[in-house]
Amino acid sequence: MGRYRDQRITVRLTEDEKEILYRQMKRAGNRNVSDFIMTAACTHRSTVVNTSPILEIKGEVSRIGNNVNQIAKVANTTHSIFADDVEKLKGELNAVRGLVEKAFGMCVEGRRMDIGIHENSADKDEYPLAAGV
Image (cartoon, rainbow, N blue to C red):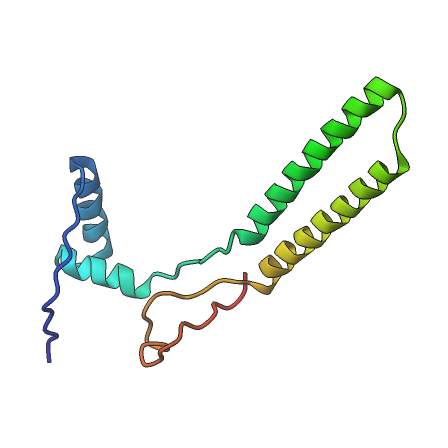
């Protein structure tokens, strides 16, 4: 029993992209573009990456850099560094260390998500986590 598809998606391609698409379709052994795209979409495994911890780290490092520049300016002007400034930098560096450990932990845990439709997940409403990193 065949499937009835009543939805259409239009994609615009350059001439080169179209040639690549048809070449890949033929290599994959698909009869037509529709079958090729459906096979690719339904069996492709994608990785979803949460970049928010990295953006937090970037912001923290930027703030620390600004503080270091301010302290260096005062040190160059007064020829001394205040203990409070050093302690403040230590605290900021510890905050960044915590963010880096959090981001690393997310990578190690394998925050990969399977967003394709596969035989083992076609009947499920959720997307299972992919095995491994």
